[in-house]
Length: 151
Image 1: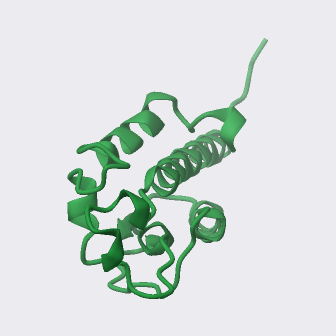
Image 2: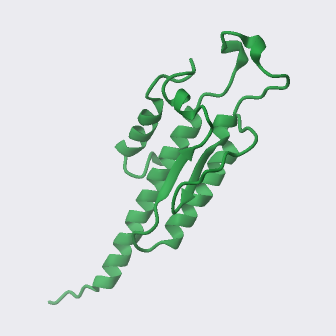
Image 3: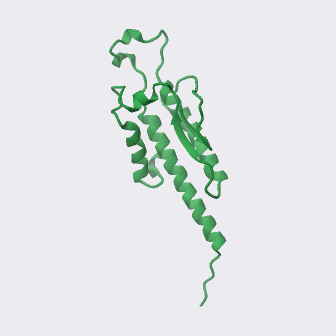
């Protein structure tokens, strides 16, 4: 009895499986970063009166950007207090990356360009401990493809 294998078919299947897992892991990282982001709450500030008139938190959360091929220098205007539209935009970019690639290609970058991003990542907000960004990424990496129940 002979069994025939088509190396191209096996390679395509493996490439697709790797890209799917990569996409789900990238999505899990992005989701964790968005929902782990502190959202400005003047009630928690040392001087709540310093909030500008009409202040609405969520600008940092809105600025998690997923881009293909390199860094995006943009800072996005506006807010996204609950993270839904930012997460949807990220899912779209990740899907375009994974559906359009069949071999290793340009990088996929997750970034936040607000001027105070590093301060927030290092615990500047009482809502997020120092190192929360690393924790959000590491959590996504512990389970290949992220958690099924959160997709």
